[in-house]
Image (cartoon, rainbow, N blue to C red; front, side, top):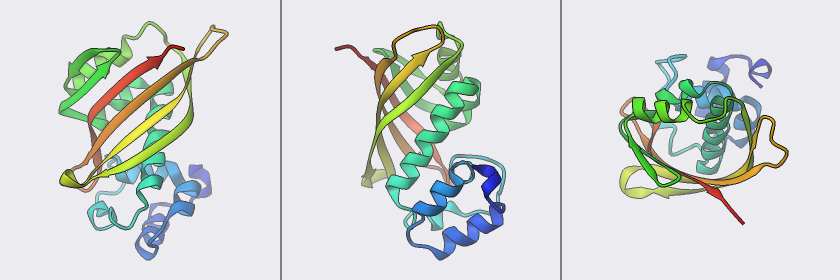
Length: 176
């Protein structure tokens, strides 16, 4: 995906000139995620002026793609999406703080997995200018024949720098 982009400056121009950037997100999801979710790629990009312009569903889908790609390939890389006040409820166990959350995720009893997303639903969280993102899908563990169904909810909040972080994260396996 990144190879199809002409660079961050072109994406900035496209985002600034469009009121609906679904096509940009589809072309450059990885770049958009890096701009919105706490990368140091472009410290001059002011996401706060574009948050209202970017379609919330597209932003949620970009976040979900970034999150699960990172989870599947480098769980420790998720640390930048959480803060000290963030909380993860993982199968009923509550974990608080970025370091503790990443410690939990990196200590799961499987080293390789692949998430296949079925649905992504999003609602604005008006009181905080954040977003609620609900995800359902399948989790395929290496060496296992059958995938596990899961649901996950994220409450994303904006940062003063104009990106988003995960305040709340609830994960559950779905048993039929």
